[in-house]
Structure formats: C-alpha cells, structure tokens
Length: 325
Length: 260
Image (cartoon, rainbow over all chains, first blue to last red; front, side, top):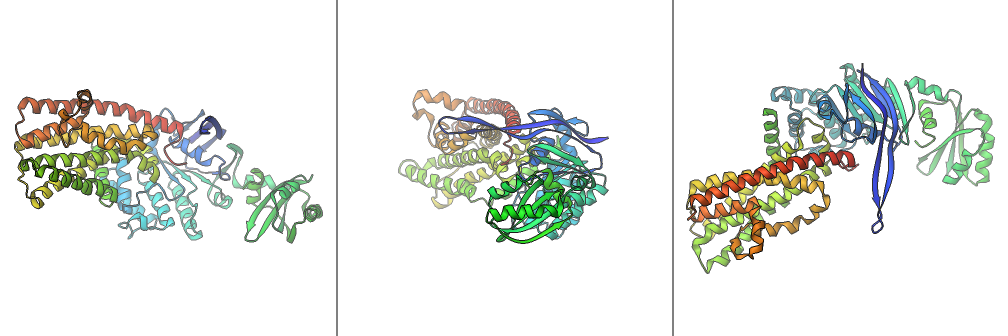
C-alpha cells in the first residue's frame, strides 16, 4: 500500500508588487507533480534551492492548500481530511526555528507531547528515550537558546517523533550541520526506516539521497524531471564523460558561450576560493577538450588543471537540473 | 476534553515562564501600572484619600488590558516569527486552545498588577484600603477573568487575520482606559460614547469591581454587570471561533503560517 499518493499537484503563489499601481504577480512553486511513496520506504526529493521541495512538503503536511491536483497521506486527502492526517505525521523543516528558545529542551518536548495528545505517562517515557536517541540526554534541562545548531536540529528530530508518527517529512534536515552532526543525523534517519516508518526526505545533497533513499525524485522549477533508484539515476549519465577545468574568474557569459558548443551536454561552475571548477558534460570525452580550451582561450580566461573522469551520481543530478545545482 | 485541558494548562505554565523573562511584559504588568498608580494617587491625595481603592482597581485594570491587548495581538504572530506556528497548526490541538492557555497566562500575570498596586498604595502611601463588599468583589474578579479571556480569544485571530491592524495596537491601549472607565467614570464622557463602552466587557468589569470595592453596589447593579460580562463573553467566543477558522484557512491558502 502507498503511504503517500500525489497526483498533478500544483501550487501557485501570488505576490503583490508596486506601491501606487499595485499588481499581482504569480509564481509557480510546484507545477503538476505526481508520484507515490510506499509504506516503509525512504523516499528522497532532490532539487536545487527554489525547486519546490519545501512547498511540496508543506502541502503534504497540510500546512498549505494546493492550487490544483490532489494528494493523500495514508489514504486521507490533504485538504479535506487534514485533521485525520495530522496525528499520523511528523515533520522537520531545516533550520533552527520551530522551537521555544527560552524554554528547556524538556519543556519543549513536554509541550509538543501535550499538543499531540500523548498520554503524560507515555510522554515521560518517550521523552527520556528520544533524548537518548538524539544524544541530548543530560542536557535536557538547559535552555534551547544555549544549544548549538546541531543540538537544535537533533531536538527537532526528537520533537517530530514524540507521538510515534507513521509518516515522517524531513525537509533538508542536515542543512547547516557540520559533517559529524550531519552523519549522526543520517544514522538516526536510517534507524527510522528500520522501525518501519515511511520517510519523505528532501535534500539538495546528492550523496545524502544516495546514502539514504530507496528511490529519488529530482525536482527542478517545480517539475519532477526524473524518478528512479539512485542506481537508475546514475544510468542517466552512463554515456557521458566529465571534463573538469580549473579556471580563474570566468564570467557567466563565457559559461553560456561554452553551452553553445555542439557536443556539450551541460556546464556547471563551482566556486572554490579564488578559482572556480568548470564542469562540462559531454559524450565525446577527452576529444572535446581542445574545443573547450579554444573557447576559453578566445574569451581570455586563465586556465589551470584539466581532468577527464567518469561521471558520478552528482553529475547525474547536475545533468537533470541543467547545471543549476 | 482532558487532553485539551492539558494543552491549556501546559501552554499557561510555559507561557508564564516565558513572560517572566520578557522585559516588555514586566514593564506592562508591573512598571506601567505603578506609574499610573503614582500619578492617580497624587491626583487624589489632595481630594479624597479614601478613594485609594479606586486607584488600585483602576490601575490594575490598565495592567490587565495592556497585557491582554499586547499579548493578544502578538500571540499568533510571535509563534509565526519563532517558526512554531506550523508545529501548533499541524498538531491535533486547535490553535484556539493554545491561545486560550496564553490568554489565561496574560490575565494571571496582569492580576499581579492589581496586587502590586494594592501593595504600593497601602504600604508606601499609607492609603486606607479596604474592599467594601469582598464576596461580590471576588466573584466579580472571577467573572472578569473569564470575560478578559474571551476578549483575548477575539483579539488574537482578529489581529492575525489582518496584519495591518497590529500596527494600531498602541493606539488601542488608551481608548480602553477611557471607554472602560478604568480611572474615572464614563459619565464624565460625552453621551454619544457611552454605547461604545456598553459593548466592551472590560467596561462592565471595571464598573462592578469599582462598585464592589468602593461600596454601595446594589444587587441589581452587580447582577447586571455579571450578566453583561457573560453575554458579551459568549459573543466574543462565538466570533473568535469563526475568526480562527478564517485565519487558519487563509493562512493555508496564502502561505502565511511561516516566513517562507
């Protein structure tokens, strides 16, 4: 049985602009997406910033009403049956907000347990267990304002598990965490699946999706551009090679100029201190290097090291989102 | 029902904890009524020292109203800014239950104003203070708490449904002191303003608290004030129920539950 079913879900935001002559501007957040998530599955929604991940999660957690389309959680409609869905789901939105900073971790958990109508006796036991699970045991009486970002994020995990929900929505849960904190949190997420929870995870880290998810949907500009297992997604770039060129001060117009080359599939640029890593996907392999060098030389771009390598999962993602990652 | 009462209790308890370290609330509940009480005491000292209880009740009412107005206005918006509003809305508890707990906390904190003013007047200024009709006064205080909670339930969604209204919160503070008859009787106001006072539960609260504390309140007067507070309280609760539904629906449509 499917825990989540999404059909042609669409969300348009309206914003008013102008002071005297006020006009309404429409922005499409999610543009007709469809997918299913099986019970007990860890499903990933991967996409760059602004792709529509958070909007999708907010609609599925009943916090936002879709403009069109439909979705069900455990068979309940997200608009009509919101009250039936809420006790069965838990969610975390990335970032540090969503907690009472002037209260202790224990008070925060006690409050949310009451909001979810958890029996006080059960809540006491769950709070103790969850504090152990997220590694905050012994720090529960401290005010949240004194917590590090990682501790707050782990407290969010405990909060979202208090009422033992069947379906969990984790929206970029490792955002802003240091590598150790992020790895610990990923382990917590893995453990949830072993407890037969359904987990809907959004991230813009390909490796995170690869390490955790059974299936991944890639979203870009509000549309799902691919939905497959991580292995299946890698096959999207089997025919390509990746040419990485170290450049110094390349302008966006020059990147566009490279995109015009006939045998180039996608081009992306990553800033690395004072230099940039230019990544070109092409089915020609090393044979395209002279063309790239000629174009860069013509544009007067200073070039460093050049390497040609096999594509990774991250390259598959970059290709799917058209170099916007 | 028990689960909802638990939500009210926990919200109340944790909100009091948070308010106790909120400097703005400390000012509104303790310092401002103190300043108003000092001003009123000096105004009355040349005239009638026996009116000390009137000052105590009046300045206490100002603290009650200030706390209710500001907390009521920012109850929902503060949750939005903290990012906790989504957590509340997505829970099985109703937002109204949470606001009720918060309003109860505000009213309780503000009753401290009255105790504080009482202590100030009797100890420092050595004014003779005695409540003339203590039993009706205490019962009136209890009904006042209920009426103020119902008024708080109305203010919170009203301010959330129209964010621009919250910009007027300061302008709403003093008119209630005047229309509510907190510091002087509304009979001193022009006649056309009296109907405005009659639809405000705080006016009936001030009227019965002043009358029972200063003495001379008839049973008919007391019952009329109680009845008006209860009737208006029911009307406020009914209106707030509709407003909460509108607020939550609009927030889900307009994406205003969080600062996305």
